[in-house]
Image (cartoon, rainbow, N blue to C red; front, side):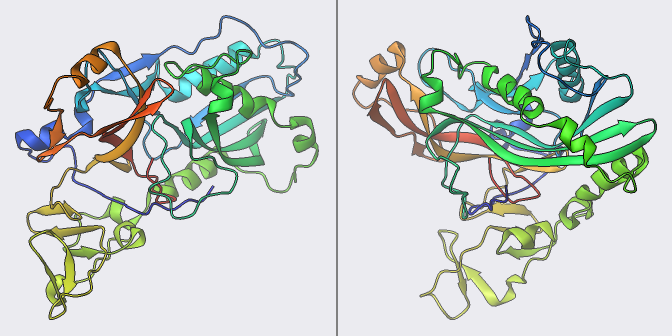
Length: 373
């Protein structure tokens, strides 16, 4: 799935010196929640997998987590209530162990092995269509959770690897699915994520894929690793520094090719105009000078690098269940809610025991598609 991010907002590194305000906005300091996805049951032996084992390689831009979740207590929420989603033992090991344990009655071969390379695996618990210029017609906006998946499957036979398939899609936890008592998915755990992992195995006819491989197109492990590593050779990732100037587009930032600011001027609100023309505002994404990299139009450098990706907090509308404490606080006149730089949070009643909150939400950039999730 190729989706572009409309409002791409980007970068300093976690190691930069920070003032108190910057530290509060730094996603690097968020706590983590580690999940154990070991299954208490086994897949039925009627599922036939023509492999003796399944291996998993994590080749994502950020291998440290799977996304963010909100651990909400009583009352109202703040930035620190968000948590990083992780798996016990690490993503690749946890998924590998889950597959080989859960499908142990289904692995019915002594020669072939299956290698799964994770290129994208991300849980978006706060889906929004606001930042997507191009949307696939089959992707629903009103979902509770979107799981972005891009994986590659290889058959390993002896010491050679043969490409089987590439999957690039989004699994969506919609209203209809969350209300299904048969499926029994919950938003507060990884039940839908585990369903996604099973679907990545049970959806495909691996016997047919193996029978159709071209034995002349074998790859070594070294070549696969090299191919994966090349994805990280983006100019903005390998540059010693971010060039000074104005970044107008996603590609400008990824290629580290800003335009010079000498022919442009900013007004007091951070809006960009050509010098001598104050009538036509020019949309830009960020601006870099000798002091750092700034958002449009706030001029605050609250973007941090994690692995080979970039992440930050951004204001977004999120549907959250009502709480008793929250409702009581909402009845108090002139209640002040947490905000940033004088912007107080706005809440709207939406029915179905939910409220639409306009809050700061942690996001990350998909460096392949420019998508913000």
